Length: 229
Image (cartoon, rainbow, N blue to C red):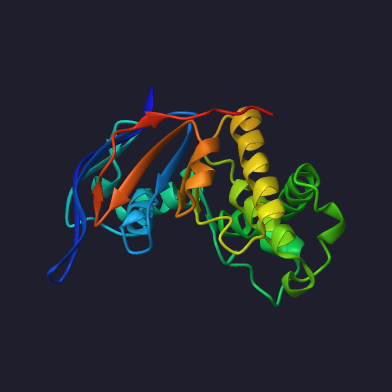
């Protein structure tokens, strides 16, 4: 079963073709690696999947619905509830605690505050940072910050996790910890995870990969070595 179907996607900035006629199907429950050098269009593609950057033309079907034909309210619901995003630079707010950072999606969803606190604490415990909840982001290591960012991405129980260079600022050991954690989330919580990266080694841990160059998919999808934890 496919969770996304992308058809003839194009994204232009003035005369620059950032995404050029990309068509792609993404299976539900897989970890897909989108690999390529900086400037190849992979982050632009991720933003389009996330509903935050409208394509110039083409279609993005999520569970058989074209997200760019949604009303503004439904598109906002999609961004808030269907996808969770992880960033290279974490996007944590330094002036609030880790607990409050993790709670943000639930607060924006107007969830009950006690429910949000309880869920944030349970998610943090699952990801091994329960002892850091009263800390501020500047007090955490890079790996701990990324665990907090992953916790935040999981708060509204999205079906899809979009990860934009999630290990780009991490050392090799911490990189492996984060990849293993994402694999565990995929397998135990049954999430679809799409990772954008320039690191070919990360592709070895994905169920499938595509390679991009100059806005195009330049290699056929190829099954790689799947790992389970």
